[in-house]
Image 1: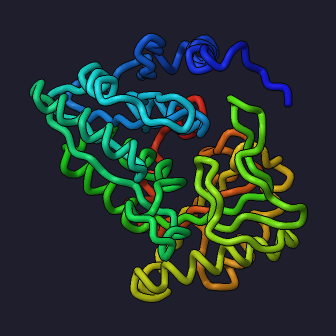
Image 2: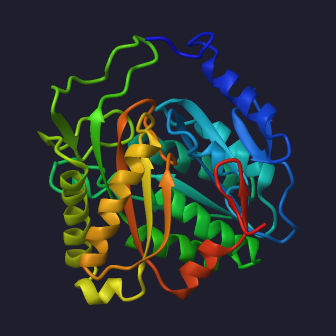
Length: 340
């Protein structure tokens, strides 16, 4: 199938060049070292936020660099973590006396490389805290030793912690916000059509017509089981019941976590039209309301993708007044903007 690329060998550099040309007011891109930084640094004395990972998930993470979110994103190859030296370089470029919070998705490569990058930065005298995002409930009982994968909650962590840092809170306070969001958010995804590999142009797995992969990740992984695709209402039922059951079980019952309402992120996986996402969201919202779970804030669109996979990930974060206030604070990035 056709793609808008020049070469597999240069596609990451070309992506970064295009990002820099499209948003010169927002980002400063170090193409050689694959680091995307805020064009206008934070005021002195503010905690920096650094994250990153492989490409193929856009706008995660490069699209969330800017006011109210990340100070720098470190970019790897497609579905591949950036190397430790680049993580350390990014931290060195944006971290001041207030220190830096490092947001890491729970994948083996990201965990290992970011940990080593943080150690290199510590050797250089930088002060950091790390928060691990592991919100994908699909992998509960699949025998995956590294635990739950980090998916949609990454955006919610970067948004709320970024707002806290912008307010001038110290590193421990910013990390506490990030850890609270990471520990409470839960995500679950389904795939309706596999993505296609850049190297071969072929689907990364086979999916018969009329079937969907239930519990997909964001690196083209198969789901944990396969079932009939069904209507939007039926698919929404699978996703919502899975998440509500998990939240009830792990956070002490419905009333223990739902009284403050929730923040919801419904993200397409790269090839799901907005038409379908909004149809699906209407069903999701109805199901949540029926369950007495009130949606106070929501995002519907493409925020955490998997190249051109058709499908979605739903993330639910039990909220409170502080998290809603942080969510509503000004944010100005290429992929998220309000209040400024």
